[in-house]
Image 1 (cartoon, rainbow, N blue to C red):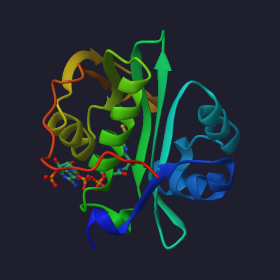
Image 2 (cartoon, helix red, strand yellow):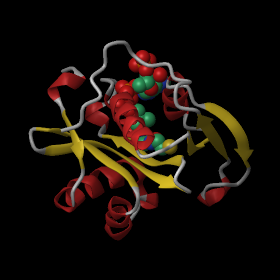
Image 3 (cartoon, protein in one colour):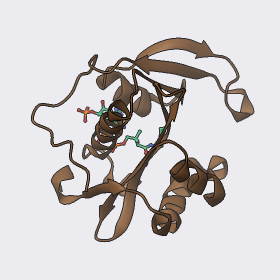
Image 4 (spheres, protein in one colour):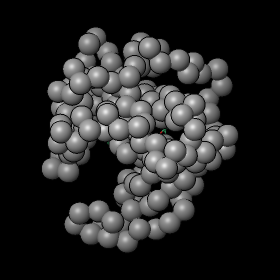
Length: 163
Ligand SMILES: CC(C)(COP(=O)(O)OP(=O)(O)OC[C@H]1O[C@@H](n2cnc3c(N)ncnc32)[C@H](O)[C@@H]1OP(=O)(O)O)[C@@H](O)C(=O)NCCC(=O)NCCS
C-alpha cells in the first residue's frame, strides 16, 4: 500500500482515542496523556492524522512558538504501517502549514539513540544543532535538530493538500 491510499487531515477531538492508542504503542510509559494531546490540538500550530479505513495510523503534532518557530512536538506511525512514507508525508504537510502560519525555522528534539527518526529528519533537511545531555527521563541524551524552510530534501511531485 502506498501513501496515496491514506487520508491525511487535520485532527479533531473525535480522533483522540485513536491518537492515544497510537501514542501508547509508540511511546509506552512516556505517552502523553489524552488531556495533553487535546491541549496540543488547541494551541497555535498543527495536528495532523493519517487515517486508513477510519483508523488513525499516524499523527504529527507541531506548535508555532513566538510566531516564527515551528516546533515539531511528536510524530508517530503505527508499526504495521511504517516504511511506507507516512511520516515523511506527515512532516511535509505539517511544515507547509507552519510556513503558511509564519514559521521561519523548524526545530525538534529527538533521542540520540532514535536512528530511524534522526534519519527521517535528516532526509527532510534537519541538521543537529545541539547535543542535550540527560534530556530524557532515565538520563538519555537528546539532539536538538533544526531546519530552515527551503533547506529541504523533498520528494518531487508530492501533493501538499490536506483534506
Ligand atoms: C520514526 C517514525 C515516525 C518513521 O515513520 P515511517 O512512516 O516508518 O517513516 P517513513 O516511511 O516516512 O520513512 C521516511 C524516512 O525515514 C527514515 N526511516 C524511517 N524508518 C527507518 C528505519 N527503521 N531505519 C532507518 N531509517 C528509517 C528513512 O530515511 C526513510 O526514508 P527512505 O524510506 O527513503 O529510506 C516511526 O518509526 C515511529 O513512529 N517511531 C516511533 C515513534 C518515534 O520514534 N517518533 C519520533 C520521536 S522524536
